[in-house]
Length: 212
Image 1 (cartoon, helix red, strand yellow):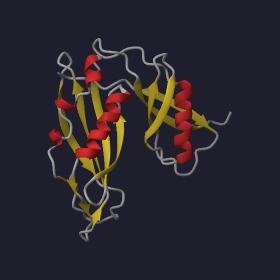
Image 2: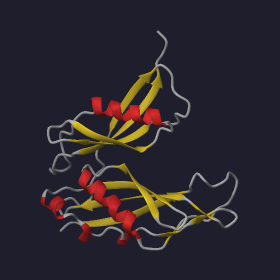
Image 3: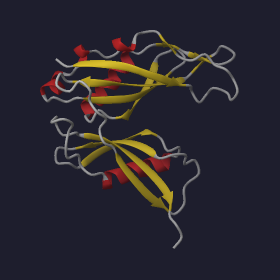
Image 4: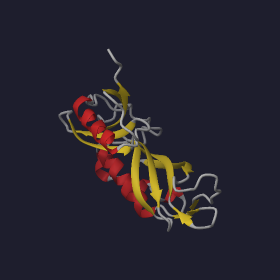
């Protein structure tokens, strides 16, 4: 059976915090090491020797419970990514963040952990995909590149895409996934002799086309 290490790397304050106001940050109510354990390793993933590092962001509501989970860097396998979020949503608990007046506010928590097989105790991050798309004009609201998670079929064709970190513009996010589905190269290898990935992250940058 594989083993895992859940290592917290910090949290980010919610965007709802008023500028200039001091706030009480999120506080853990349960040990991160209890959220996902070696006993949770899916038997099918063990049999197929699937392993990888998962980076995630949870959005925490005003009661201290997570109400959304985004994989900000994939393990390389959709099964492990989806299962990771299901476990985190069910088990992660916090004392909510509070604004300067003491009112509970929404906040986000970001961390990572590894699904680790015995022969691969330190899984590496899955190589990402960088795409640059030229558009006639950047729309209002575009803040940064969109980060998308794309899944591939056994034949190597992309069959689904989800934006995990928004560009700041809904239309651009949709276009990002459309471009990923058209251009994303199929995974060709795994890590250290493991199975070929079925999921990759794609960073899609939109740039205004230069006048010719």
